[in-house]
Image 1 (cartoon, rainbow, N blue to C red):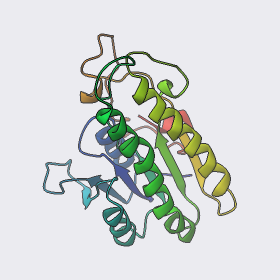
Image 2 (cartoon, one colour):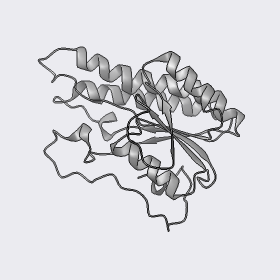
Image 3 (cartoon, one colour):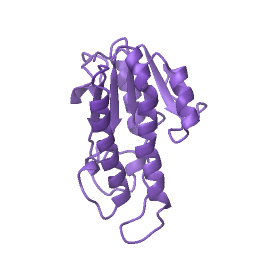
Length: 209
């Protein structure tokens, strides 16, 4: 999958890893990058095409798929944390994590699957986490949502193989973003790939910030 000349969509594109994805896509020659955000009036990097998209709103997801019918790369980056610890706290945050991280990814992926097929197959990239594999008593619901998202990613990999869509799961550790602000660990900052680097295919780790 060659990024140069492609049209991409990144959900949760207004900050952190999502912003880094958009910058890297532009740096590697993407012809257009849709920035999927809940508020299109929010400040975005230059060169992006804002697209109203709350991944938990199925009507907005369907409208986004109609508006961005030229995409060949979809990056499901939108995600939240904020669930309770294992033994105490309201479950409302856990439900929100599932709604955004799991059901949101599912909604966007299936809405854009026919768009990717119509544009030659393309690539579907899901931003996962090492938490997909590790039980965590401090963030159990976040880890569970990422495990569910990982399973979903593998299901889409099988389902979209025949239409030629490359499905990639990115299992990252802690990154220095707002989402990990309360984590007391040394975390790398998301960064833009240098514009002088040759555009690698999306299916390799070097293609991702």
